[in-house]
Image 1 (cartoon, one colour):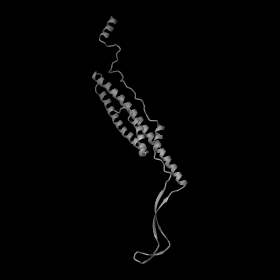
Image 2: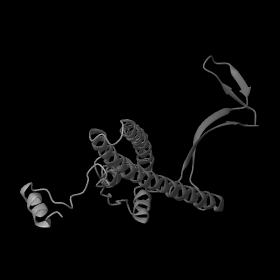
Image 3: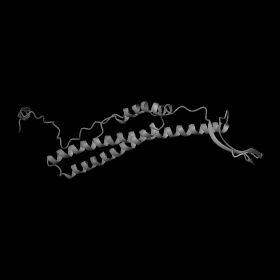
Image 4: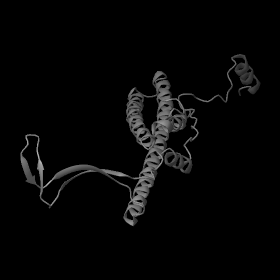
Length: 216
């Protein structure tokens, strides 16, 4: 019968605890990333507030030509008497004081503007959430690939397991690159709601979330 005291003494002498985990078989260490997304209502309001101020004087400038039905006679530069109908051209400015049709158009334009802003905000939030999911999966696959590498070194499995995880990591990196392009497109679309004076403030707010975390 083996002496348990000798076993414990040998374990302490080798500085190797008997309960140590088998690294190649252990689950990989994986830390989830915090979800950092902009507030939808705040971002929507920022996009609306940076819209250029509406014009309350929607004046129209038109060029009009007129032909008088009355025949007149005049002396031209050569001293000859000429008769005919006078033709005139003029610039005419129109400024309606009240127009129910224009008010209806203004309400429709405002509704379309708010709808476009809501769609742009929703699209950006969806892409940021999808980027977060891809990053989580990328981190998990990297951890599994490191575990597979140890298993290959230990001779537990062949290299096909590690290759499978490496291929998945490469595919996720490609998806993240494509996702980055889509996010930039949504960012520029939101900035399109602003004039030059307000675009910088909205862009600085967006980049707090777009540059969040470390991209693989």
